[in-house]
Image (cartoon, rainbow, N blue to C red; front, top):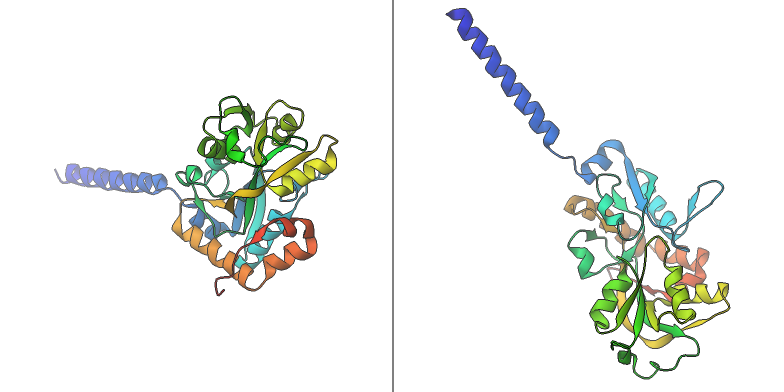
Length: 277
């Protein structure tokens, strides 16, 4: 009888340890916990100059986002690993399992806020209605575009499709697949496949430099939007990143980077106010 009781006791203890082990395994490690444990921050990213580019021969990443993330890594004593390139439509889905944050700043919008936190803004961007350079139909009243007879070029799953639905719901969306990229959105307006699109001045200026069929922006901008890093829905991760970015804003590091290394981009954006201003 004593042997039977001992066997039952060991069996119960074994089951307890097994359940504890399973519970520990099932408890998911947060992005913040993983970064602190490994001293490594894994980046998911998009390629869009001058924010991020990749050398086709060496694979080296460069650009504004790269420089900011590497400085964040120095200040937090963590290594930045550029883990995975993804499209705008799926990049938020990779956090935090495949990478710890999206290391490419996006428009902070209500549509995206359901699935991600955003960092403190890096800066602000003015958004314009964009047409062919010789098209004057919407110059005096851009809201005329909000009509079923007009088409607005958008990129699937990207901010252009969100803003088009919000601001010009009656216009027909001429949707470009993510696989083709944003350049085709601008191109289709320039060649007359769509009447207009939504963009920032930096993108339009870059397009006009590289193409003969030019575009124009219609003043004034219809939206000023914050540009921020999408991050996991983890308040500790957000606090760590925000404190570091606020420090880089307050000591002038971000402003100095843009003014000295990316002066053309600096002229097009609206700087974020320092916290003490």
